[in-house]
Image (cartoon, rainbow, N blue to C red; front, side, top):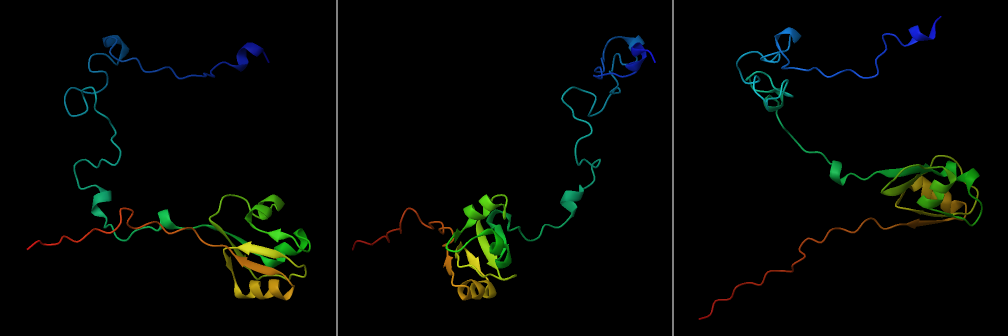
Length: 170
């Protein structure tokens, strides 16, 4: 095999279509846009996204109902009591930072939930936003402490204070 043949037919860049360069190019005069119509002149965009030729578009035909809880939705890291058994020793504090350091949770979360699957024999101080009833019972049975962390602060409703009622002067 000859090395000059290896890269034949392989092009790194596609050359742009040069329009308006005479009748012999095949893309002269109207530049492939036709003679008249909405998309023949500059500034027009074809194909326009979601355009359906003048009929009522699909996104306007379908009913809009309900809303999403996306902006207010909280994501919690979930850890079982059995996962804590082998990774933590007596007297240690278990919270979201220590769980990330040990590789039990990965990513960003709004809080921590502890569930009761598995067994626990070491005495731990567990700080979380929520405990299931079985998890709380198993941690306290092993001699540990469950500390419930407060949730995020609620937004202030009226920052300007109450409006003063107008009094009539007689």
